[in-house]
Length: 302
Image (cartoon, rainbow, N blue to C red; front, side):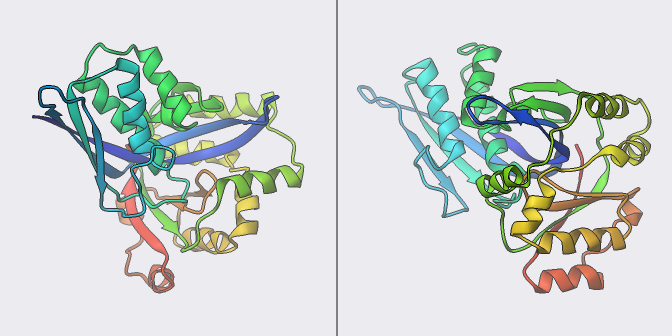
């Protein structure tokens, strides 16, 4: 029996701008993603199949809402795609997922789980697929999955297929807040379309990229660059879940140097200048949110 484990890190979108739409209707994005220390854990065991048996795939999790059906579970989908690609393995593949990243938050938990499985399977069956094939599988699962194969700080463009690494912004302390309600991604994009806002201009892209490539200390670079950052989906998400706006106000009041919603929400985040500046989870403002069933955690960029 062989076993490997992987951390599946959460992410935030430092900014998320709409860059138009393809002919097939898919939205084109211009976004910077950043991985966090917050993570799920993936464990994969290979158990040799008995003589005459074909290998199988099983899945267990601490989240009972996740089924074995790959159409509803990115973790299983990733393993199934990899197995189909390489053919019969001669092993039973047993996956265990321990979830810490909340769903419908914009933190990329499902996409990160899928990428962690692809990476783990690639290490268990080395040389059976190329890097290009691994990326093709990742994109077929979801737009954010290719980013999670690299992680760190990266500019993501198109529908997620173009990932360019940037100078890292690791080690920045932060606070994550999520109201009890999640945001439906399709509903959020639909509301954005109804608003009729223009896409980001090439000039804006260039200015943002210059800020991101600045070699300053991460916190100083963040303080400079975030003046141009925004999330185009924040306004439509607030229209669906107004509590998001309240959470952003709380983070600003607590001294965050930059606040935004991640992805299509409903999680929001605030960066702080140093660990001493991060408010205690027992402070009155945070306690008031937790009493109303908000999910709150401290973490940092990695």
